Amino acid sequence: MFTQLWDLLVAFARASNLGFGGGPAVIPLIKIEVVERYHWLTNAEFTDALAVGNALPGPIATKLAGYVGYQEAGWLGALVANIGVILPTVLAVILLAGFLMKYSNSPVLKGMLKGVRPVVVVLIAQTAFDMGKGSFPNLTTWGIALATVVSLYWLKLHPALIIVISMAFGLLVFR
Amino acid sequence: MFKKLWNLFIAFTRASNLGFGGGPALIPLVKAEAVDRYQWMDNEEFADSLAICNALPGPIATKMAAYIGYKIAGWLGAFIAIVGTVAPTVIVVVLLGSLIAKYSNSPELKAMLQAVRPVVVVLVAETAYDMGKKSFPTGSSWGIAVATVALLYLANIHPAFIIVASMLFGWVVYGRNKK
Image (cartoon, rainbow over all chains, first blue to last red; front, side):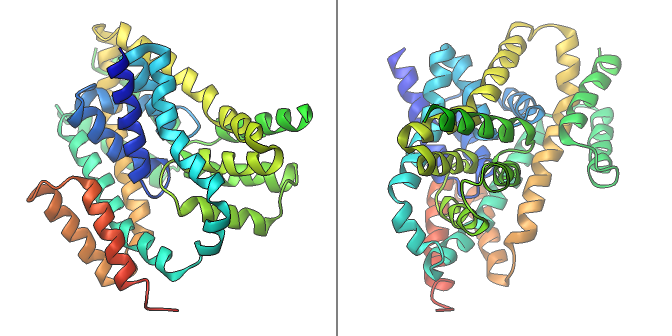
């Protein structure tokens, strides 16, 4: 039990502290820890966790930490995983605020953030690709993907609404 | 003091529970609370705090909550603002997750999940596309992207190393250009 909690803490702290660009940039790193390193969830289960997380409001990294932490070690696991995600960067922001204020406009820091951004984009694209591998077992699922693109870009539907509609559709068609 | 903490809790709970799309989607809502509603800071201070938070890794919403909460009411304020941001949605996601685990063999749930997975793939791809639009201002950023793909797929290098390496590269190449 203790090892499990420690693993949760380390996994989520590591993912959070390497993700530059807010919660969405942390998603690929959480996937690497949860699916590939510790095998807490399969690829498909991780996609489901992300579906539930995206259907709800609020930051995404903490929702994933709660979801995975709870499945592994109950409410305590959810708490510990969230501490891993939140605590280190929060301490840094409070303790280093004066220092960061001085350097947040420095060309060096801006250059570093500019250098890392394409990497973040590739990591997120890779996450979509990996999740896509198991998510299209038949033609109808491709139709759903196409309908999602149309709803997002032309109809401007809210992503949470698209998630709920697709689940209702699945209940009617795939059962 | 108690009123201040209560306001922090309410402000961050409201911002968090109205914003879909992860932390970055919450920023305008946090601004509406901190600057417009409670006037804890002005526009410029808010922009500064956002710059500070963006310089660090990790989720953005919790860093903003900590920074603003600490400014208003010390460590307790930071704690309360984070709880407001995180607790409500984490509790709901855990409850939904345990339902999914419990009914994972039901055909109804399987049907719903099969239909939602393509949606999630598109949403994540869209996140990459949106971030990509802002992230490729120069040819060398495309070079970084191509190098990342090569290192990930051909060399099987852990992303941590690629992240650190790209930041060092950015320091050397972009950091000195404009002083």
